[in-house]
Length: 68
Image 1 (cartoon, rainbow, N blue to C red):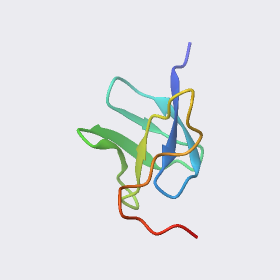
Image 2 (image 1 turned 180 degrees about the vertical axis):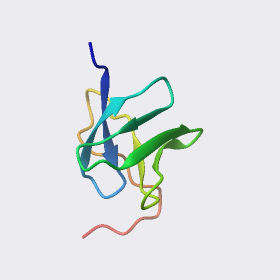
Image 3 (image 1 turned 120 degrees about the horizontal axis):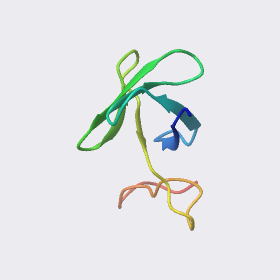
């Protein structure tokens, strides 16, 4: 049985990672993701993705971010 995790990038994109173990995996575009203290980081392009809770569909923006 394959294990996977679904995350959101800081841009708001959803990423599904098929886990190789506890701290690494590949997404459907075959990019390597590793677990780090600040979230999951893509080795290929440097994107950061985090878990999202049940109540928030997008990660919260830091304080002071401008609203459009």
